[in-house]
Amino acid sequence: MIQKLLIANRGEIAVRIIRACREMGIATVAVYSEADQDSLHTQLADEAVCIGPAPSKDSYLNMERILSAALVTGADAVHPGFGFLSENARFAEVCEKCNLTFVGPSSEVIRALGNKQVARNTMVSAGIPVIPGTDHPILDEKEGAKEADRIGYPVIIKAALGGGGKGMRTAWTREEFSQAFLTAKKEAESAFGDGTMYIEHFVEHPRHIEFQILADSQGHVIHLGERDCSIQRNHQKMIEESPSAAISPRLRKVMGKAAVGAAKAAGYVNAGTIEFLLEGNGKFYFMEMNTRIQVEHPVTEFVTGLDLVKEQLRIASGLPLSVTQKEVQLSGHAIECRINAENPKKGFRPSPGKISEVHFPGGNGVRVDTGIYSGYQVPPYYDSMVAKLIVHGKDRAEAIAKMRSALGETILDGIDTNIDYQYEILSDPDYQAGNFDIEFLNTHRIGGISNGL
Image (tube, rainbow, N blue to C red; front, side):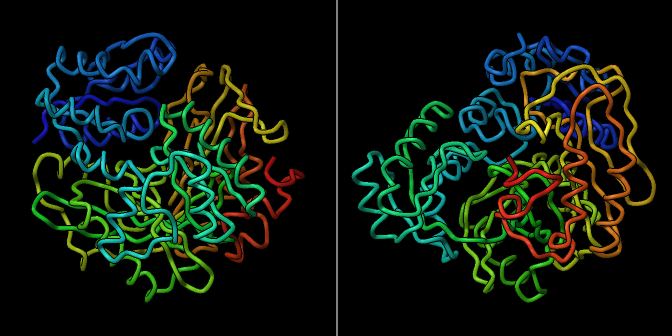
């Protein structure tokens, strides 16, 4: 079993992992940048090591400093959390070479699935439904245009090694393709250092459905149901829920089987997420696989009763899954709202600064994952998410009512947040009726803000 774990991350996910380790008797090492010296995760961990200046490239993305901290403190494992180095195959590989257990899949699997084109081809070979698209890397505009004509418009152009909505553009017609391709390629080169692209048919008005999977080194692979992540702005998720109002028991069984098949085809071990696009007619397509714990994992924990971080640590220690597929039962409904330090009425402008007062809600079925506290200084260098509010009810209607109540009770003074905006989304009749897709914020005027801008 893992004895001492270094968490190569910050904020609420670092706090979340530390708490799971405490319950399991695993010692923890936090790493922090100079800007995060007073962060909650540095105070909760058994040890804390400064790894550099505030910019991510000098701290949370600096492999050498993170690995040095692990070796100096005697850690025998590293948990990457999400973001930063969590899906970096080179980081996982170096951990392996340093005899550090990487809490996640192998570097070979991360490398294969991190390239969207390779991942796509793997799924095609396994018989998993995929969106019509290219089967090889696209390096230049002319070749891309020919492929787009073959696939059929509209098409979406994506960075092969990308994520987070960067390096992604939609071309609705042949005339729009050139500009869309060049813009996406330039953005991909800037964000990921690689301009390799791939192209696929753009599925109009789908829902974004992802299946949580767990796989151990003994060959057991299970799924824990789905999460609906369709409420998103600029490809960034805002509200997630489980189960999805659009998924019937029969469709869940079919999609779950496909998700498990996808994980097996990739030779996957640990926790991961298979992401699909779901059309209104029930057809679904593989989109990508995330080789890490997800921001929205708490909604799955609420409806299954499983602790996904503990499962990750068990699997990384060589232990089998704690449950079988037959033992997984979905109970009730869970919703998560991401609380960001930003001002929706000013173009969602980030709002770093000192939090003068904090009050989070409580009660039955209410959970808050955060790394902030009264007096905490939200730094301007990292993602704007400062907390996750998660609720669980006996059904979707109760979960929505509980979330609206919880949002109304939440106080974060000193900074701007998207709390009111989230409240307005949950109050919208179409959202409450389950009538939405990934274009929801582009087709609804929420809180007086049109098109989510």
